[in-house]
Image (cartoon, rainbow, N blue to C red; front, side, top):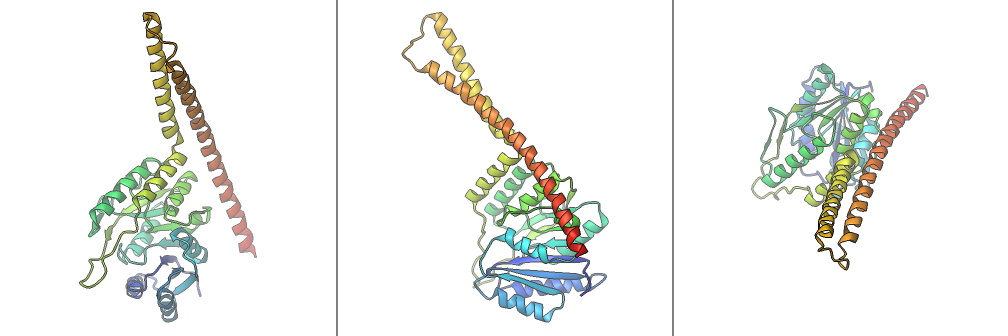
Amino acid sequence: MPEPKFTVVIPAFNEEAHLEENVRSLIAVLAEQPGAGAWEIILVNDGSTDGTLAAIEKLAAENEGVRSVSYKKNRGRGYALRAGFEQARGGIVVSTEADMTWGPDIVPRLVRALEEGEYDIVVASPYAEGGRLENVPFRRALVSRMGNRFLTSTLPVSVSMVSGMTRAYRREALDALELESDGKEFHVEVISKAAMLGYSIGEIPAVLRWKKTKKGEPKRRSSLSIRRMVTGHLAHWAIEKPIFIFGFLGLLLLALGIAGGIYITELRFAGGLNPERPLMTLVVILILAGMQILAFGFIAILIGKLRGDIIRVQRENRTILKRLKDRG
């Protein structure tokens, strides 16, 4: 088969109910685009336990542009995307959800944004001007918006959606990234490493629309775990902006220690200092702990710089391996 202009990678886990309908709607939209046949869809069965694999195989058998990747154990969204990316042949790679919450037209929009712009990665965002959320539960929408604002504050990017899957990548940018995450933190990892390597990242406004539940259908539930999200975001913050955490705690302890020292000095000159009270020991502990935590912050900054050097070396290694592979 000739190499397609772009590849759409769609991971699926237990999506039997609506997968065929959603993929067919995407195929219909892509068939209307100029240069029909210049695309491929890779459906990744992420260890589904229902009839998802059978639906994928049926779609692949009936459509020449649809290919399948499957494995038995559920490994997570990040692993599924990496598996699909490895099989992608297009010069542009688009990833999106199997439930088509962004609508099938988001794919050609993302492709055009890359072709017509100067970006290496383009993200679909409901928080960009002109985008919006529809029929998304208030709790889910609030947590998502707050989480993305927090994440964007830790990264040198101007996009408003960091945690979303629906994006388009230039092949060379995607090939340069050594990606490791298996879960949803994969999306943040991509943006973080791409920004560190100097790739330009933009966004387009989009509508994220949850389908209304029909009468008799089970109500859709969010898979978002607030505890897991908060833990993951704090861990990311510690990696990207360690001085904010260590610096704040260190300076706070130092300030308390110094304040305690001033208080002790005043007591000493006023003649009211009681040597049996452990206040002096507490002051010393606070000052030493503050200095130690600040030192950890500076070490974390050096580790962050080392991480950037490792990511750049990984890009060079991947580039060399790709050239060797292309030469056969």
